[in-house]
Structure formats: C-alpha cells, structure tokens
Image (tube, rainbow, N blue to C red; front, top):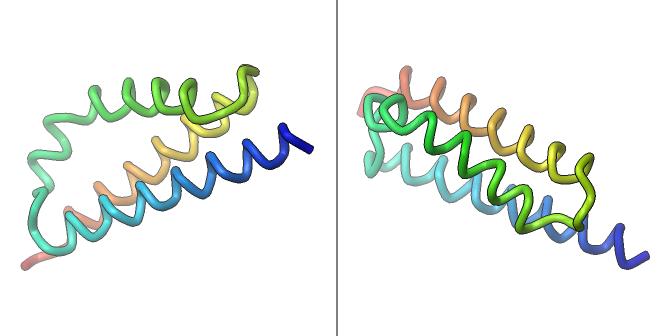
Length: 84
C-alpha cells in the first residue's frame, strides 16, 4: 500500500509540474527557442526527478521520467504553435 501511495503521489506531483510549465509557456515566460535550447537539460532533469520522486525501483523511475519527457515534448509542440 505504501508503494502505491508513493507512486500515486509522485505522479500527481509530476502532473502539477507539467501544468506549471504549460502555464509558463502559455503566458510567455518561456519561448519555443528557450525550450529547444534546454531540451537536454530537461531530459536529464526528468530522470533526476524520476529518481527522487518515486519509490526506489527502476520501472517506476523510468515511468516517471518517460511521463515527464513526453509532457515536455507536448509543451514544446504547444509552444511552437502558440503565437502570443
């Protein structure tokens, strides 16, 4: 039960982080070019956050990192077509 609660909490926290970045892009704090420039850092950071936020097993860490990378790529796509 502790494993499931920890995993659910970490996915909730990760989704809140994605929402925050979406809002920052939407309101023009980050641009498409800034996100492209820092893509490698975002991918590396996703793996670090996956290791820190999830229980200490590799599959859940990879699940979190994959979720964060996929969300980053969607935000990147959104920022490319967001013309404010």
